[in-house]
Every structure is written in C-alpha cells, then in structure tokens.
Length: 119
Length: 108
Image (cartoon, rainbow over all chains, first blue to last red; front, side, top):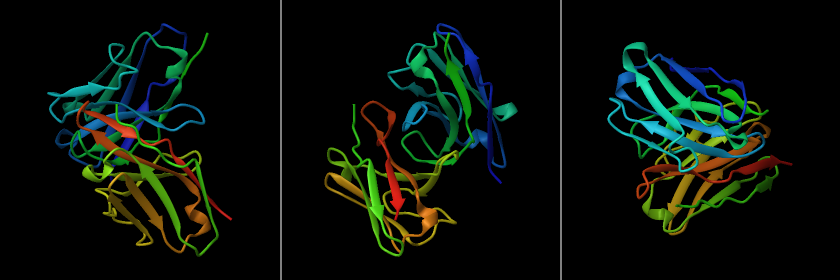
C-alpha cells in the first residue's frame, strides 16, 4: 500500500534552516510528481511546491520562492524540502503528497510533520 | 493569482443532502478536486476531475462543475462525514496549486 512518511520537523528560530524528508513506499516513486503542502495551526491548506518525476520541473508558492528548495532522490524513494530564512509565518504542519502530474490532484498524503518557527 | 472561495461552514441534518460550493473565475474550465480532512488527520481525496470518486469513497459523494461554481454534494449525510472540506485546482498561468479556504461541515 502507498505510504508517505515525513520527518525532520521541529522548533527553529527565525532566520534558521530546516530540511524535511518524505520517505515513500508501496509504489514506483520515480513515476510520480510530488508536492509539499502545508497547514498553519487552525488554518487551511496551502500548496508549497512541486517537483516532476525526473526533477526536471519544479515550482514554488510565491510565499516561499527563493527560500525553499524541493528535491528528490529516486534511488532512495525520498522527497526533500530545504527551508531557509524561516519566518514565524512558516509555522505549519508540512505534508508531502503524490500527484499524477503537476496540474493535477493529490491522491495520497503523508501524516505530516510540524515545523515551528519561534524565538 | 487564482482565488477559490468556499463558505466557512455548512450545517446539515443526518440523512439529508449537503452541498459545499467552491467559487472561482470560470472554474468550469478547470478540473476541480475535493479533499476531506478530519481533526488531527491528513486530508483524503474524495472527488477528482470534478466528479470522479477514488476507490473506497462512498457513492454518496459526488461533484459537479460549471460556470463559476463547483459543488461537492454529500447525500444521506452521516455523522462520520463531519469534517473540513477543501476544493483544489491547478492554476496553469502560474503553474501553482490553489486550495479554497475550506468549509467546515457540521452534522446536526
């Protein structure tokens, strides 16, 4: 069965960095686009970034462009999100999600990892 | 950027029909997807490509999309349907995902 397991969340000071990971299993990881989606406490969902199956294409939400970098290692069935220059408003649960293509839906989601940006 | 508008809340009695709307400029020209999120859990896809249901999602869940409004319809509502529901599209002009603000469905 499809499984997505995020890790790497935690408490970080404003201006700091954090790297999230998402371990995938139960499907051919290299066939799928992947995205990061976040949810601030008590708020709605916000799409953050996507990466194509071969890493050829990526894009970011305007709110994180220039600060976050998405990447993947198909040999390790893993997705990553490098987050730099973190701000209080980046505090959220971060989900990784599988998509068929970029312009598409997200059919499987991980359970999320909490990132808290606070001094 | 493309904006999706959902009502913050919808209430319905058990056994009745709930309709949750998602408004956007000419949304009928886009594919709309819907997610259900229960407290403390990750979102679950319930409708994709306007009206398709993933395996395991009850037939009570259906979707439509036309003009400036997409609608998620839940028939014969059960207590277990109480959750937040989000619509989602892809904004091709910016190549970015877009979510609606979410609708809290309360079963009376």
